[in-house]
Image (cartoon, rainbow, N blue to C red):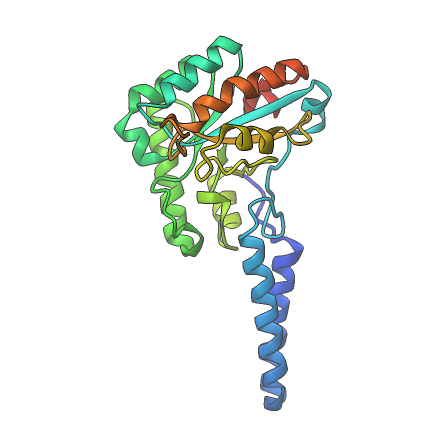
Length: 266
């Protein structure tokens, strides 16, 4: 049995502020403007934390690989929003050609539409993780019940297809709310974000995307790319296909070893 969920200090403070505001207003009703101000300020902080994908204020969040992986000069390439039947097979070929491994955060409904492709990802030595079932843009506004149902549906789909239960979850665009951490704890999953994000769903310029990934690149980095919803280059190519060979060459030149999250975190 896993230990009970423990709120972060920020969540503890939120609970204390709400309780203090309620008690203060009961004891002295004229206190309400101060109580309201404290609540508004607290909600602003918590909302901001949910809008920062790499924040740990709302709960544990994997943004870098552990020291052992850093010592081995490992990095993790993570690829979101697939599987895409046009793009993902080409991504797999590029990774194979470089002898590189990656972690694919797959969307549940896309996996159900392309189960053979999901199985191929695993068969070729890569890792499949949970990017939610619906990939709803409103995920950060979900209540705990709907959030748990969406993540659990993604877990069930990916486990049924691959025979492996995902260990990590990544929220849509990395956005979340305070309900996510206790939901993940109950489901036995870790939240994973990234070190470097190139905004490759918006930017189709390979030079810009690569520069964002490689700026201060080093051991322990978790890199984000997209095989689904990839922006297109000027000639209509999914930008990941233009960037990935150059990224892999850069990693090789810097003697950085791209591995799956599971291989980096044992």
